[in-house]
Length: 156
Picture 1 (cartoon, helix red, strand yellow):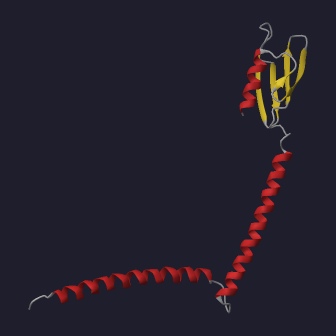
Picture 2 (cartoon, one colour):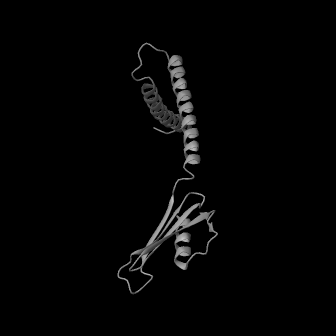
Picture 3 (tube, helix red, strand yellow):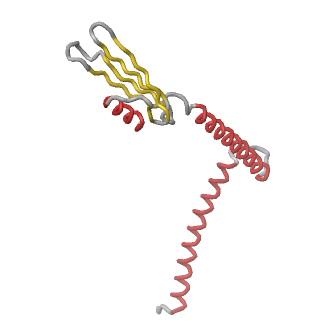
């Protein structure tokens, strides 16, 4: 029995058709799975009604997202003046007193506006100084420690 070129062509075409059949079977399974997922829990509705329902849900979700974005924007605007940056340090400026009873506290908002509170503790008394910060700058002279803590708070 001799193999002719017609036999080779028929065999090649048969293999190609077998491959195509397998590919199309897999594709139909995938589409069928997607269709079943789309139409689950739906009885008595056609595909057009189902798609319209899904589009309505998508529209509602888009509106909800829009509303949430607007609320987030308003929230960001309203919280701009809240304290957001804090820096704190205890220290002992006078060696004759014990412990780190003195402190510097820096409180700033998002725009670097706020205050620096400095407390200097001595044996007989404690003095507290408040310095206003506007746009990251102070009109009063700052100590080295206050400058360091102000910069530290601004980096947060």
